[in-house]
Image (tube, rainbow, N blue to C red; front, side, top):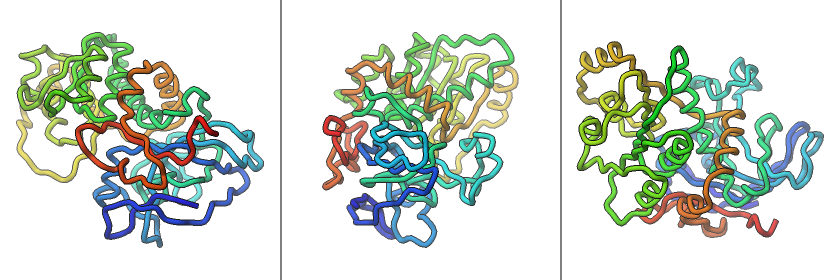
Amino acid sequence: MRAIAVHRGEESPRVIDVPTPEPDPGEVLVETLRVGVDGTDHEVIKGTHGGFPPGDDYQILGHEAIGVVVDPTTTGFDVGDLVMPTVRRPPDGTNEYFERGEPDMAPDGKYVERGIVDAHGYMSEYFTSPTEFLVEIPESLAPHGFLVEPMSNAEKALEHAFATRSAFTWEPESALVLGNGPLGLLTLARLARDVDDLYCLGRRDRPDPSIDIIEKLGATYVDSRETPVPEIPAEHGHVDIAVEATGYAKHAFEVLDALAPNGVGALLGVPGDWSFEIEGGRLHREMVLQNKALVGSVNSHIPHFEDAIETVSSLPDWFVDDIVTEVVPAEDPSAAFERNTDQIKTAVEFVSPSER
C-alpha cells in the first residue's frame, strides 16, 4: 500500500510502498480518507521533534487521520463506521497512565506517539488500531474531521486552564491567543463560543487569510511587531485567559504581563532550546500577588476528542472553508508540506469522502 514517509537524513517526505497491516483480534483495519498536516509534522520532517520507530530508517507521517472501518474483526465496530484514532500508545503493553485512561498525562518514556515518537503514523492507505483508541465521528465530519485532533488539544488546554481556577469563582470575559497558525485559529474559534472580547497575536502583513479569519470571528488582530505582548494591556487591556500556540519561548513569560489578576496562561507551543534573560523576581511576584497561573498542556485523549467533535461540528461553514486551504492527493502530496503565507491548514487525501 502507499504511505507517505520521511527517511533518516532526509527532509522531504516521499511516497513509499509498505505492506498493508493485518489487524489483530481487538483491532480494526481502517481505510484512510484524509490526514491533516500540522506544525508537528514539519518538526518531525526536520528532525527537531519525535523519533523514528526502533529499527526503521523511515517514519510514516501523520497523526490527524480520519478513516472508515473496513475490517472490524471481533470488535463492536461495523464496516463503514467513520472513525478517528487518538495519537498515544503504550510502549510495552500497558502502564498506569493508560490503565487510568490518562495517556495524555504520561511522561516521556511511558508512551509512543503515532507519526511522531517511535511509532508509524496514519498517512497511509490503511492503518490498524485497538478499539480503545478510536473515536467514532458523525458522517457530517467526513470531509474535515481531521480538524478534530488539533481541536482536541485546544479543548484539553482550556480544560486544564479552567481547572487551575476551579477553587474560586472565575468567569473570563477576555482572551488572547498567541499565534495565528492552524492551532491558534482553531483555539480562537473555540474561545469565540464563550468569550466576547478576543485578541489574536501574529506577525503577518495584510492582506492575509489568517487575519481575515481572525476578524470574521469577531476578534482583534494584534501585530506583535507593532504591539509586543507586554504592551498589549496598554493598548487593549489585560486579558483573563491566554493560550500560547507559537512555540516562541519568550511568550511563555511575557504573557504574564498581559494577564489580568486571577488570569491564567495555557502553553501549547513546543520551543527549541533557547537561553535568554527574564525579570524573574518581578514575574514571580506578579504570579503570587495577582493570583496568576501558567499551565502547560500537550496531547489529548478520548474525552477531549469527544468535546472537539462537538466543537468542530458547530464551526460555521465559512470557517472550515477558509482554514482548510488545500487538500492534495496522496499520489503527489508535496504541496501539503509547503509553507507559505497563502496556506493555513492542509491535508492529504487517500479516498475522497464523497466517493466512499
